[in-house]
Image (spheres, rainbow, N blue to C red):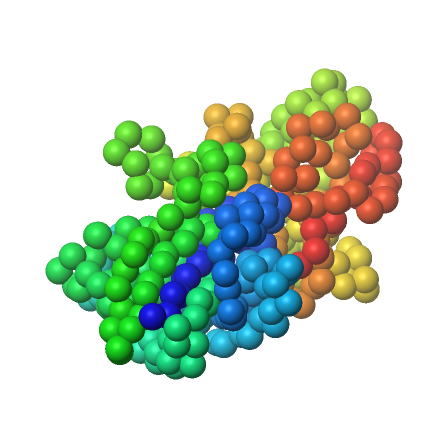
Length: 375
């Protein structure tokens, strides 16, 4: 009998930016690193003879932790990749729902029958995964192996092997680094347990911090983005509120200068200013400076703003997700931004996302901390 541990990758950017991450190669978050440490502890006394993962770094980084201390060499296989979301790749979930109403719900509830143009089908994704799984089950007969993969494809595989199209809901949804144990013998699989995240607590779990699966009438604030319309008064008002909130006064504030700067940038880069939208309400604003530090391979973020009624809801990361998405497409190696030394709330926020202080940059009234997030 062969034991096969199927592990979902640790929390990655798409999980906090609320974007579809299929075949795009995204980074593990700081919370994801804590999940990996908990996963490694869970497997401390579990024998493993081999370890595999998809070739995407969020999965391979997760699997690598299980190789450590065992002398195992990780093998990657692109057949263990996530479902290819095609034209939906890297799109905010809210944007997908806006452009294709009901698409996300259909995929979540009924992936077996969900058909979206350009997206890999249930049959295509499970066929490639199961072909690789069968090979490894035979190759490691009588031994124990671990495979790190991705949430949607792992759910599809459980449906294909054990639950079928009429009982898809029983497959559940896995937390980041959740584990399912399969036993393989004589050409057939048996499910021992599925989606077990008992090694995580409420602080390290991803899914326990989300509301979409709960019965309570709480909601997840998923955002979509639309280009800035050069509304002078709206922009200056946001800038003024941010300045007042950070510094406690308006000394040195230059609303006209800020507006002129962005207007000039948007003549050449129409994506440089964008509203973050919750349904049809402005929830925030993100401003980029694409030419600044471009020679260093860095994408610069000039302004990050959440409207007062949307603060402290855990959604600011989605604005950073907009910047990451834009700059990653351009091949930038990192994004940077300046944070006021007195803005302790902002510093804590950026630290949680994986930013680190790499120096200082001149500001209007004082030097700002230069924060960097590697891509």
